[in-house]
Length: 393
Image (cartoon, rainbow, N blue to C red):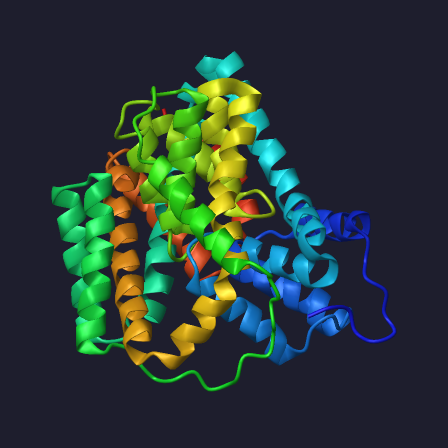
């Protein structure tokens, strides 16, 4: 899809500036980002119709990776091809990535700052945020008893065996069970209307697969290669985006001993308050391990698989719409994703943050702020850190 008749194709610089503004102002997580994109590109600029935008969103939600960022780079691709896609991704990601890398460098230069009450306040905030994410995703992705049962079984399995291979195996089994049970197998209702024209989509798919295999090769912990491998693997295997990246990265950075759980959750809490994609949390992890270069490598690596899959994704999307079994398998995987996040909610999020009745009370208060009173996360995060300084030792 190219520019509409009578409209000139935008330059990469124009696309970058437009998405930079969105990257500086788009608070609220993936769902909010999709709303911002709809207002900007469907209602205001009329780059896409509602149905075309819906197709783009559906494609990106099908694929692993950060859905809102994938939607953004797809829109950039439609207006400026591959340069436009890169400009859109860079503009939307740059503000939050720079903030998270700077935060990591600040903690490295001032380690004692990571032991104050504000860190504990952020950890409690993360408990409330992840609990809210589990609740919302569970209602959407587990609407019936079979899928609720699948999510619970996946959570229990991962709490018993929390290795990366078990996470992959659990989602694969969930997909197979979903296919056999024919879960959520209703046919798609509208024809595909957004022709993402990539001349060689198979090359992107092959590149994705090769890099995924390479990411499983042994690397020295803390090296740039290890950071790139951990991030690429997380970006390639995360269905649902956003909060679902937490258990994958926790397994790589905390369970491996490369980073303390307190530091990990503090960075995750700060990421909640940033505009732009939550995957920019990767910049904090990479920056904590290997400085600014590590942060840049981490950000590129975690977004790369989702980008490759977008460019290779149209054939997969068309095929999926025609195959009931494939849609059922995806429904099973999505139920497994809820279980994956539920397990992470308990360990490490809950176990490392909630140690007293006061902690539990603060978590409940924060959850009510999110779920009932709709307090924005960008406001609640600093308030949580301040509350930690005042109320907690």
